[in-house]
Length: 182
Image (cartoon, rainbow, N blue to C red; front, side):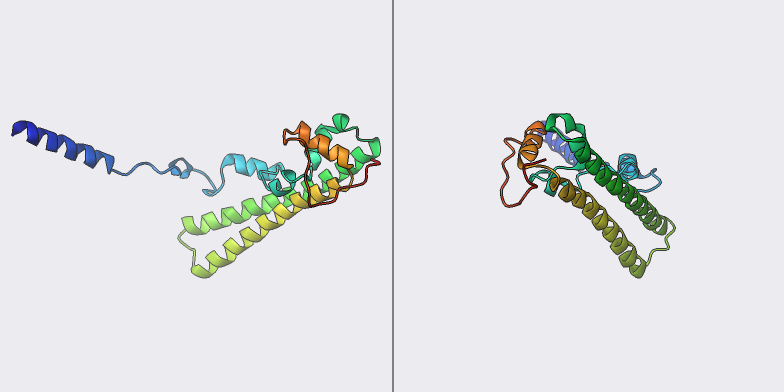
């Protein structure tokens, strides 16, 4: 009987300790200035990093300007093509930094409204919609750069890019690329 009580008691203690609250995976964010953004995300926005914004293009055969420039020699890009792609990248980066800073500011304003207990439903809807618009525009800027670069590359250059980036043989269907005289 004592053994049975001891087993029941041990089982109850095990259940009680297992049911205690586990720390949230976000617990380390409580001290961040902007709770919704990690320092890495903030740095990415400020540096115009893609952060996965253009994966729909990249993984479907529409190369991005940064990686094309990194692979320029292997792709056999002419000086004129390099300059044109650099111009696309420069325009994209400038707009991405501007939008990234706007996202950071909008997230900071939302965080501040919650922290100060000043948030209302109307404010919430307006601020979240604004952030979503900014992020959508930022993604469009990155995707537009991929579209623009693709028009400057030959089919063979795009295939080589795909191979060099580790995406397989580079064969993608369903879209047109630039001519093969690049």
